Length: 469
Image (cartoon, rainbow, N blue to C red):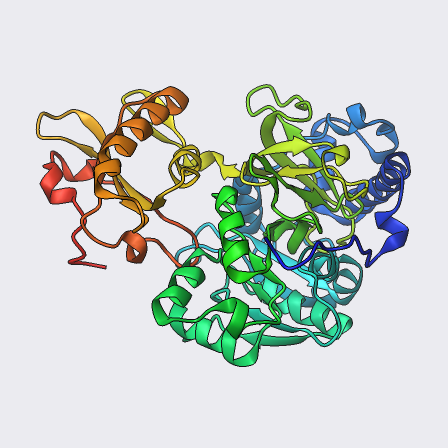
C-alpha cells in the first residue's frame, strides 16, 4: 500500500465543509442567477425558454427547472452553424473573450466551441481544488503532465498552468515528443511528486522493462493517474509506485475538471471503488434515465446532464453529456465533504455501444470483466463476420507472465462464461500471440475494432502477430 494515509485537507474550507443543505441552497441561488443571466443576455437560451413559454421568474423549484429543454451536442453544432463561429449562446461581447477552446474532432467536424472571459477564468477554474484535493499538490511540488496536447485538450493545460501558479507548484510538460520509456526516465531524473495524464499501467510496464524502481528512483512521488476503466488494478499500481492513484472527471462544457477523487483515493477496498466528488457549487448536475428523462436514484446509472453556474460566456444549461454514470450520495465517502459524486470505474459513453447479434455490447462492461481479473494484462476485441457470414467477437487476451501455461486455458473458459453471464453474448477467446500493449493507445484505450465492413474474415486473418502497429 502507499507509504502513508492521506489526511483530509481543504483548499476551500468555506465550500468543502458546508452541510448538504447549505450546499444545495448555495447551488440554488447560483442557478437562479445563471438562469436570469442567460435569459436576458443569451439569444440561444432565451429561445429555449420561449419554446416552453417560461421565464426565469417561473422557475421556483427543481421540478420547474426540469421543464426547460435538454440541450444536445447537435443543438450546439447547429447553433454554431447558424451564428458562426461561437453561436448565439456566446452571451458576451467578443471583445471580452480571453480564451477560445475546441473539443476534439476530425478536420474541425463536430467540434463544439467554448469560450471564457477573464472573469470566467478567475471564478471558474476548478483545477485548483482538483489539484489540492485529489492530486495532493502543494507549494514547491514538481508536477509532471504527460497528457498529449491537441485542440481538444488545450483548455485543460491552459487552466492547469493558472491553477498550479496559484498553488505555487512547478510544472513540467512531458506530453510532447516523449515515448513512454523516456517519460519514466524523466520522472525518475527529476523525482516528480505528482503525475497527471493517462493511466499509469503503461508507465508501470515501461519502468519494469527498463529497470526503474519507483520506491528507490522516485522517492518523492505522491500521486499517479489511475486506470479509469479498471480501478481494481489501481491497488497494484499504487503498490508498485508507492503512491496514491487518483481519478477525475471533466468536460469541455465546464472548461475542464469538475470532479475528482479525494484523499481516500480510487479504491476504498479490494471490492469497493471510490467516488469522484462533483463540485456541485460550480455546476448543477442531473443524472437522468436515458429513455424517460426522469432523475435516477443514488446507486443507479443514468446520463449526466450539466448546467454551469459560474460561466458568463458560452454557458451550458441542461447539456446532455452522453456520459453514462452511477451517482453516489455524499455519505458514500468518508471524507465528509458535502458533494455527491460518480462511482469510480462506472463511467462510459452511451455512443460506445456496439450492436452484435442483436445485442447491445458495451466495451466498458467487457473492460471491467477482463481487466479486473487477476492475471490479465491486456486484450483487444474484433467484431467481424466469420466465413459462414455470422457475426462474431474475437477476444485476444494477453496474460501476465507469471500465469502458468497450464492455467491459461482454464482461465479463458471462466472468462468466457463470465462475459456470457454479465454481457449476454458469447465471444471467442484466444491467447494473444504477441504483446498487445502496442495496440492500445497511450491516450484513450481503443481495444475494440469493428471489421464487419470488410466482409467475411477468417480468425487467422484477425490474430494479432505484431506485424503492424
